[in-house]
Image (cartoon, rainbow, N blue to C red; front, top):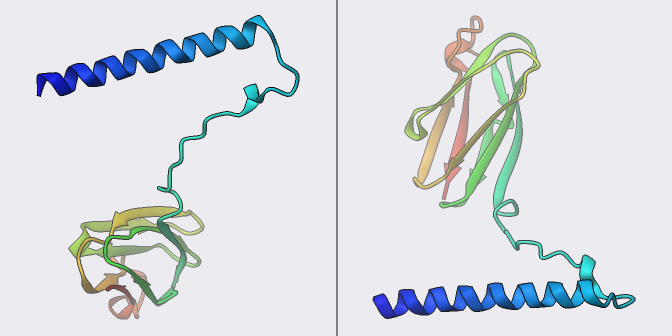
Length: 139
Ligand code: CUA
């Protein structure tokens, strides 16, 4: 265990030393068309793997009513109410957000539970309130 730690530290040190050297060279003698500007962009696939859905809520439906994702997906719901205040609650995922009119609410969760889940409207919004439901299918 100690050996590994030492090795890692040594590597880090060497990389740091190398980087410094390179910088020095570049500063010392600017080469035309050198790739100084080539920034090292961290290759993060995080954003790409997020499944994003834009939803609306109005008396007495969610649109789209059903969304389908794969188990393990990171899910982002961007929900806006179009008429009166609503709410969206997915109890199994510990989600309950109020949706005020015209205000985008972003909900993020990891779909780590398989099954079909109901998204309930959680703010009384009129006569059809108790029937205002959406469906999240995680398969
Ligand atoms: Cu919509 Cu209650």
